[in-house]
Length: 268
Length: 273
Image 1 (tube, chains in turn orange, brown):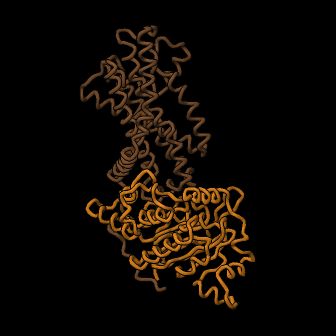
Image 2: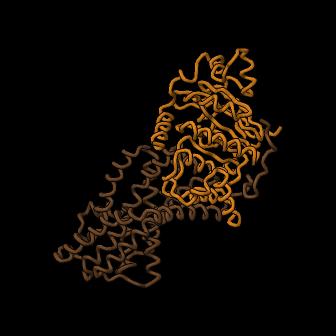
Image 3: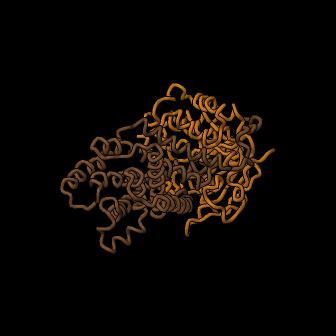
């Protein structure tokens, strides 16, 4: 089975705070892989290292066989990325937002318009494509960001907390789109979330991350089954591996908390 | 849930595709296009930003033109002032660009841009020239007002082209200075304070309002190392046809812009962390 992402011995610190502490991770091609854990677990740091936004002082990361530290541009050509915050440009229309990323990924002019239209349609935004993004709802902005990430037809889609700050209906809508993307394109999806049960419905495999370390990896059903408890959930699995629950975990790094709150504010 | 066959990479997504000059030019154009799109959707900012330079010309310029207390030789003071206000308006547009970059950092926009196959220098250059595009639109408003007020501007197309290049270079340079400061302070509030603190000294320690000859010696020294002065001199030479060291002026602007781009690029990674 082809490997999309391979992380070996990743360690990253912000000053004295160890964000990722010797993490190993393997994501197979074509799967939806969930990196789960509470705020402050190190998920976003891991994602930032995989996307080459952070240098990798200790450890090795490769994406489709390309070393992230040595081949940043090559890796980025294969990645579609949606950050935690709502990052669409409100002063541009839906079409302009998506076309911007088509240009930045060198999608040829001959197919650019079709790619943009297709990405918007796939995210259910065809009717809103000419409206300014600042008039979109939170769920629509998230779908617009998915369209931005998809327009270059990446091999690996990386979503950092894609449902944070959204209401339950919008959250379900985002997961439906993620499922649809994979079903239609077969691309690999690496998604982080602290909503464990949400992820268990869509992810082929998940990794539970806690205090910078990967504590368990497997399919959601196998992890739950290994507990041998009736009516057990992924949260129970998490508690079993860490002695802690996601809800009880501290709120995480200040910057992440600020980002989450800012996102929630933008959503009203 | 069974995983379907892995996605076939698109032709344009070849990871080994080199980032050549054509792609770099395309990135700069893309950033400029985004700026034009934003302007086209909200023109109110153009109007509000035009108020201050218009007041400088209409109130300060017209009044001091009548008083005749600033020795500008054969050139009327309003004519002398117009290129200075043009340069100042480009400075105002660009010196606060760092605030936008900090906002983009907080909103995740910067991270998203940096995960595209775009070298940092290309991203900074794109943003710098986007500031230039915004300053250009502003410059057109000021040139029209100056003409209405009777300023004797050149209509030589080559000279006007030169004016556009100078305005874009000046705005690009100060935009990069602003991004550099943003990369150091990482805070909108601090950036706002520093922007205010450096804008006025840059303006008053330049030849925008008065000739170098009337400045005290210490101010003349500052004027010589102030890139805004070279921008104003080039604009004055091109627009009014007065004596200017155009080669030196362009050289300083191009050199300062290149240094500013390098400085801002080196700090962009800090902004994305």
